[in-house]
Length: 484
Image (cartoon, rainbow, N blue to C red; front, top):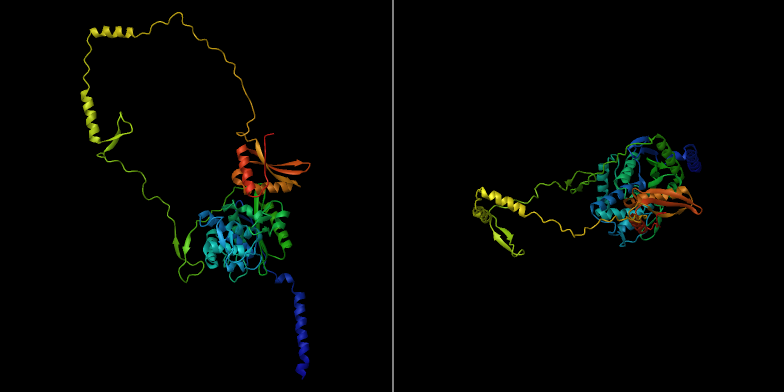
């Protein structure tokens, strides 16, 4: 009876101890581990590191590798941006964040890439992996092969979206390296990571990193990530003048505190990075397809299939045999041909030489005849009544006009904005998105009473027209600016 009477008191003691533990032990100690890494993107030089090699949960930073392999697959012709991908039950059942597609639904690969890059949609990332390799396991093996080629030595992938899974780990150093390869290996796609909104086919999506992109000057990417085990992660890149910094933070306590920490590390990076440094782009990996043997695990050695591109035989045509017959067109009928052998040609030349008579030695009396012959062929004097033409001086007329096509006096306008910073940001994003036609142009912001106009100048009429048509295809408003 005494034992039963003291039992409630024992439970009360346990409750008191639990409350005391929560008070004494700060909540930060229960949070995800923190790690950070900062580099000069131009050279890859380390500027700051804290727990940079600790293996932690990367969360949706994983999607940087998924997108990298998607760009690689498009480049290699494995599939195209317009390839229609069928959504599997596995992809459709992924938890949020997601695009919300149905099993059996078809959607173009380009929309899946946008959804994964901008919204960080898990169903889109899964669909991308299945479209490229057929299954999540096969795609994970390719992710690990690629990570090894990129030098991500402490990273192991188990899925393509980054949801928490045992053994799915990476480091701040490795994810920073991943972001740098995305930037320099596939610059044509990098503008995806700075889009505030994007058309994902089934609906319009907003960027998960729009707060940092809108608040930090020069920020243009790259990828956020969050799970309970990982905390708030971010790999970010920013460019100011000739300098570019990449920062990775693991284990943020909230979106706001993570963004503040990344901004602090960005400022540190810009202070420590030299104003000018040589650009040393990372070397892209050489793709090697690995056929896994039965019973092998991810990352195990397998059969490597390489494409041999070296020329082993000469393509120079063989010499024609001397006894070969030749088709020769006749002078009477140029269109017709007759079969003549080389021996016949040689014999005909020999007969022609023999048929030429030997030249007789000139006689003495022939000298006079030749002299008189030379005199007889002298032209007769010009008649006196011939009227000579007089060369008239012609006055030249010089016409000048402004060239409307050959000169680089044209430009394009991509909108009017409320601030100079907003206009400069749009110019940067547009230049990155349309490098092929806007390369070499002058970016200029013109202040008007109604706002700040964003212009690209120094173009020919043809290049300005082409740039506007290509930008219109990207849903970017644009109109041409003629010579003033």
